[in-house]
Amino acid sequence: MLRKNKNNPIILSTWNFGLPANEVAIKALSDGGNAMDAAEAGARHAESDEENNSVGYGGLPDENGNVTLDACVMDSNGNSGSVAFIQNIKHPVSVARKVMEETKHVMLVGEGARKFAVSKGFKEIDLLTAKSKKEWKKWLKERREMTPHETHDTISVLVQDKNGDLAGACTTSGWAYKMHGRVGDSPIIGAGLFVDNEVGSAAATGLGEEVIKTTGSFLVVELMRQGYSPNEACSEALNRVIKAHNGNPDFQIGYIALRKDGKAGAACLKWSFDYALAKNGVNKLHNVNGML
Image (cartoon, rainbow, N blue to C red):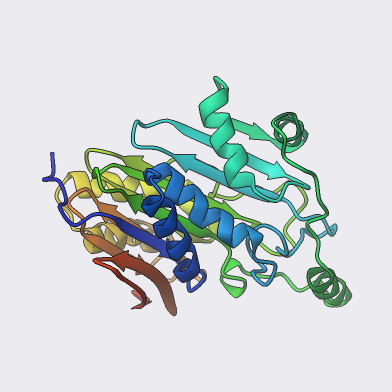
């Protein structure tokens, strides 16, 4: 077992919108919340931001003009909850937590997930904003296939609280103009997110189909268990993808990892990737260059 980090709390999240998400997570911790409370709070912030076109309210729709959302959570006890292909609910990450804490299931999808959310008091709203609707109608004229890195897709939030406990949350509106019914890695435990309170946590962003094929976040955590540093674990998980695509994948995947001892790291396949790290009272955006 890795030694316990003495410099808690730590929050690690994806992309530049991770900075304000981290601030919200920090407040949740300062108000007495635990790692799971903070991870959920950070993810909810991104879900509420209508300027963020890849998460929650304001997310770009599927090819039929429907905003469909995916999210999952995992706590320090190994419990997890998930919703996929849910519509008209603003905070799928909170519904995922309800699934984890108030049902015997791990994942609810589609209409069943929506009905469950409503039964728990979540209000239904139209998630398609005027701005996203305008973008969708523009896309309909040419129907160009989008790639996930064009819209930054997922926010993942990994937290270690003052007790050293780990938790994580992941939420997205997914691939812009995707096929109706498509689900990516974000609601899948072990793909988009994985937490092992003895070892560390990891989360993914990018082309979900390829993350699923390698159970990427689980792989990153298992590599840390074997002694890899967070940076090394993220890079090695991506090496598996590179090998599977003959050394030249034409898509982006980024991983973030937070080890039990407080070490954080990240890596991405191509171009570059931003992650936000809040540690020792400083919340800062870091940039990682692609491996290829």
